[in-house]
Length: 161
Image (cartoon, rainbow, N blue to C red; front, side, top):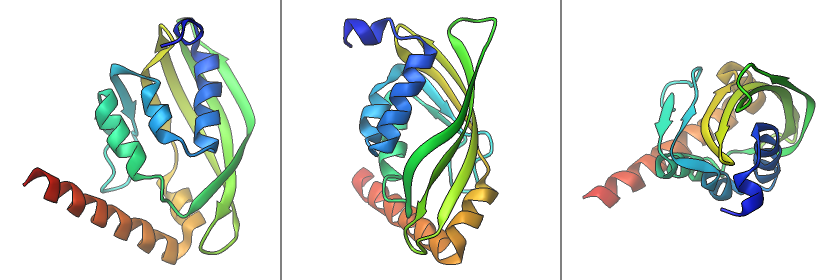
């Protein structure tokens, strides 16, 4: 970790994470987590884990979703709320992009709690609406995502045998 990253607070870590998401560099985003960090998805739909523990588990999940049929183009309406704990912020923003299969724009609101220590993410709690995601994707997009998850699951199963 660079000395600059080591002293990065939660606002700086959030800005870096958003930059990596725009580049679809989710492997580098996973590198931002502490070795025992957690990525929580409390509203995850069936088939998506609600809690990922450890940098490598987070990396496996994140790198498996890089082929989603949505192109992220930017973030807007960012509000960052400070908390009594200087290592914790709560961010609200809207992710905007295009659904590849339809060419239609999408807008997805997020609320995230971020806990950082020594420039690494200890907790990334991600509140988003699977229903809004399904609406944005439409039936064909949902089917493509489901098929991709099944394929990834089968590939993972073969590696273990």
